[in-house]
Amino acid sequence: MSLIPTTILTGFLGSGKTTLLKRVLTEAHGQKIAVIENEFGEENIDNDILVSDTDEQIIQMSNGCICCTIREDLRVTLQLLAAKRRKGLLSFDRIVIETTGLADPGPVAQTFFMDDEIAETFLLDSILTLVDAKHASQQLNDRQEARRQVGFADQIFISKADLVSPEELDALQHRLKHMNPRAPQKVVHFGEVALSEVFDLKGFNLNAKLDIDPDFLKDDAHDHVHGEHCDHPSHEHGHAHDHEHGEHCDHPSHAHEQGHHHHHDDDVKSFVFRSERAFDPAKLEDFLGAIVNIYGPRMLRYKGVLNMRGTERKVIFQGVHQLMGSDLGPMWADGEIKMSKMVFIGIDLPKDILLQGLEQALV
Image (tube, rainbow, N blue to C red; front, side, top):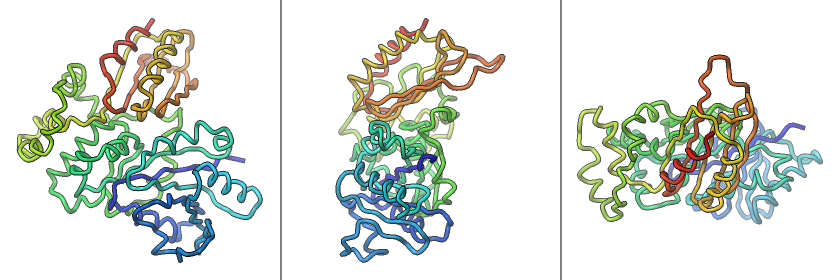
């Protein structure tokens, strides 16, 4: 039987997650979806759709969807759903897990890699993050959880963009892109997203191409190599004040490119490593193993397509926190430049140590 695709939905409070879930649960979209809700949520869909004093943990909707609240841990809930599906008691095609407003999606994602029974039944498709444009800069400044959710995302939906100026939206998109160049950003109206943009995004599929926003790489030459965040100490106190004066200083838009991210020395950052020299497999494995051991909790997502000595095929690897996996991908095409490309997204990762270590793992 094929694996059941699973989507993790995370996002800022008020970003429209509930609207999106309500639609999934009640609209006639022809898909049978099981939504797992983290009960500790501040805003519970139950109140609107369900009579919440029921003891039933699993409730079937009129359109065949299922709403399920987590009482124990996620594994138990997933196993319960899978068992009921095997016995023919429930029928559903996919799962959406909603994490509460400030939850870290990391451990939820790790469940799908770590637990054999879960991994044999479910396939993690992607992590979606909804960002409320109106309150984003405040939330990103004040809450590391909000920054983490951005770093984890495979796809970012920005809601309430109509409540901010085009300049503010542009500044926000720049800021998000520096935290996470892998995730495409889409401006949506109050969480109303076409389901085709929510499902089957293959964010965790090892063989999906390595998506890094092309504009992000375009800045590379002057930007990343020479210290993307100009290595000034993070002015924690500077935030609010920085914000007031600097953020929309109406400079012409090319200055824009480099200007923005200097105002937010966010702790969630990303950087890219590339090289046309092949990696020595043993050295690389040792180095990545050591890095993940030390910095794992601060490594949100990392992904790469690698040129390894000893194989004519691309090696594809990715990880979440301490968990890392790799696989042989397609052959390098004739005439294709064998370039290794890796992107790391994490919290205050020591960029120099990482880049130097990767450099030393080359043949």
